[in-house]
Length: 488
Figure 1 (cartoon, rainbow, N blue to C red):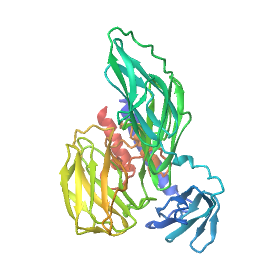
Figure 2 (cartoon, rainbow, N blue to C red):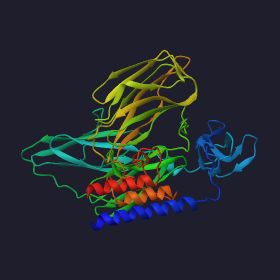
Figure 3 (cartoon, rainbow, N blue to C red):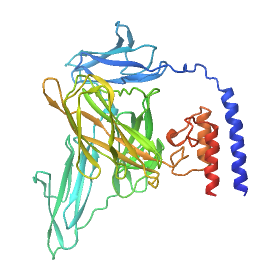
Figure 4 (cartoon, one colour):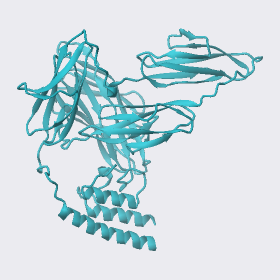
């Protein structure tokens, strides 16, 4: 009874706070309502002098983080506008978006006698080293590493077995030492430890592995950092993710499962290596015409889509192509239980003349073929899938939507692959504004902060309109209070 009175009092208090906050809210320079985003195009001069990052569509007045990474033998000079006016001499620069479409140029000078400038730490590439053990023993040391790293690998035989050797995927012997240091290469690898049955062999001593590796990675959309990449068991370190302009942080994933929605958190090392991935969602001010920043010629993007049980979700596939494309094929895998309605697939009006066919590879994977048509150079929502979420679908879960095996055809008949980025479908409870899989007072306060235009660490709009009136306001706070009261 006391809790019910408290919640009712809280609801009335929030109504007063929100009403006061809305009347009182008066930012110094609010964005004019309805101002459309404008294009920011970044170019490299010469084109092979380096790579530029930050192109896209932004609302005027937005601060955009732009940066470059120079190619070997080139030195970055400056940023200029189309008229040759120098904007900045810094490789990383915060640019304020103007009111019109703009082009900025990163200028490079060919100077092979100069050492290459240090690599941008955000661009370091990692490769996965997977370890496997045949019957008779166990292994340790796998994870994600930079190429050229020396990694200690250990194989321990069970009682009655003895260690034989390590082999790669080509069945080539890598080492006959059960405990050795392996130099990683610039590709994903799998090494297998082999054992032989030997009933007279006692258990081989197993060296204690007290330190383990913690690696962090991300796709486009932000940067990540970790306090220490190798920890003693029981020790802690901090992981942090920072979203780029035009993106929002979704969460940290461990083994493809959502671990936390906090952008910064402390992790205590267990008894094995761990690999965390930070996921960001492209979230421009006006998502009606998606335009994903890219330095690739052809790119396919799947988005992160949030919803709740009972929803019908629209899952878009975005295509960014710098030249005309013709026939194309690709494979998409959906989370189990969240398969698309193949009878209702939206095809972009910019994809002209295609005959679209689909073949089921298994229960969750489909091969798509688009033949006989053309997509002019553009950035567009190529396809949109409708996914029905069952009323009893488990909340607080997130599954990856994957795209691979992409083949596209250019005007001259040349067949190429394309860069890709996977998406996710995340399902939350109705009213779970902070995504912790609970609907409680913290969600009411989180929604109030959102309405008052105060900073919220996590806010999931798709499950916050509990009144379903297409507005997120104080009525939804009252709706969440009613949900909490019904649980009592």
